[in-house]
Amino acid sequence: MKRRLLSLIIAVILSVCMLTGCKREEASPKSSAKSTASKTSKTSKVTSANINIFVNNPEYVDAINEYIKEYKKNKPNITVNLKTVQSDYSQLLKMKIKSGDMPDVFTTSAGSEIKEYAKYSYDLTGQPLVKAMTDEVRMNMSYKGKVYGFPIKENVYGLVYNKDLFDKNKIPVPKTLVELEAAAQKLKSKGIQPFSTGYNEFWVFRDVFIHFLDASQPDDVEGLVKSLSSGKAKFETYPLINDNFFKFIDLTVKYGDIKPLETDLSAELADFAMGKAAMIIGQGSWAEADILKINPKIKLGVTGYPVDDKTSNAFIVAGTEQATRIYKDSPALAEVLDLYNWLFTSDYGKKWFSKVAKVMPPINGGDMSKMQIAKEFETSKKENRVGDMYVNYVTDDFHQKFGEIMQGYIAKTFTKEQAVKEIENSFKKTNKEK
Image (cartoon, rainbow, N blue to C red; front, side, top):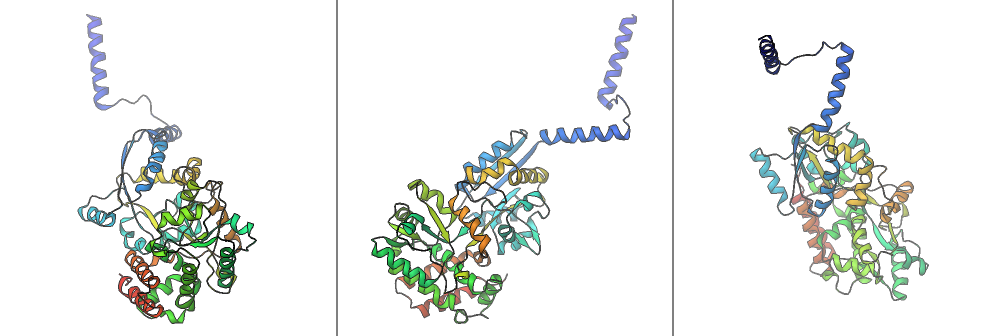
C-alpha cells in the first residue's frame, strides 16, 4: 500500500514538472551568465532556419552549392533553397517584390541599382564581410556612405596580352597609343596577328570605352556620366572619348581579325590562347579560366589601355558590376548574415573564390596564387591609380545600344561624327536620373 502510494505521489510530481517545468536550482548572476553563453553557443550550431536565395548566377550554381555544403557542416539544421535564373531575372525579382514574396538573398546590378534597391536591402555597414572587401568593390556596393550589398567576384578590365610573344619579339608593353601602334606593326612583321577583338559581342565595346571615359575625368567619373546623360557635357570637350577611342578601334580593326564583326568571344579567346593573336580586346580577369582551358601553359599579362600619350593614363579598371543583397526584413536575417560573414572571412572562404568559383576574390587576403591577371593587377595598383567602374553609372539598355552603334561604325553604317551623335543621344535617352 505504501509502495503504491509512493508511486502515485512520484507520478503526480513528475506530471506537474512536465506541465510547468521544474528548476533544479536558482542560478546566481554569474552562473546564469555562463548558462546563457553556453546556450547561445549551442544554439548557433543547432538553430533551424530556412534561407531562400534567388540570384542570376547560373554559371556559379555548382560553386554556390559547394559553399552551402561546407557551411552546413557546422549548421546542419539550416535549409538553403537556391534558385538561379538568367533570362528575365530583373522582371521576376520585381514581381516577387510586388507580391511580397521576397527572397532572403537576391542580386541586382551595382552602381545605380544600389540606390534603387536600398529600401529593400539590409545595411551591411560594419559587418565583417564589408571590412573584408577590397576598396574598389566596396565603393561599388555603397550609397550615401552605407553598404547595401556584396559581390561574388572582382573584375579587372585591361589590355590582356601574351607575355611570351612580347618577350620573344622584344616588344615593350605599350602604354601610349603611339607605342601600341608600333607594337602592332612589329608583331605583324613577325607574322603574328596583333589583336583579336570579339566585336561580334556588343559588350566588348563597353569594356574598352571604360578606359577612355575614366581617363577623361578620373577624379569624378560618375559626374562626367551624369553630365553626358543630362546633355550638359558633349564628347567634343573630351578628346579621349571623341577622338582617341575611335582611333583605338580603327587600330584594332586594321591589325585585327579579317572579319571583326563575325568574331565572337569564343573565337577571340581561342585565337589568343593558341598564339595566333598577341592581344585581346574588351576582356579581363573573367576570361582567364577559359583561356587556360585551351592553353594551360600561356603566360598572361595585363596593362591599362593606352588612351593618349600619357603613360599614367594607361591604368587598369577594377571593381564589380553586380551586387548580392540581403533582404532587410528576412525572417532568417541572423543566419543569412552569419553565412556570408563566414564566407568572406573564413579560411575556407578565402580559398573558395579562386579555387571553387574560379573568380578573382573581392576580398583582401583572398587566394590569388594561381591567378595570373589578378597578380598582375596587384602589382599595377601599387604603381598607378585604379579606374572607376563607369559601367555602374549607366543602364544595361545603354550598354547594348552603345555596342550596336559601334558595330555600325565598324560596318561603316555610321561615320565617326554620326556615331558620336548617336551615342550622345543614347546617353540622354537611357540614363535619365530616376
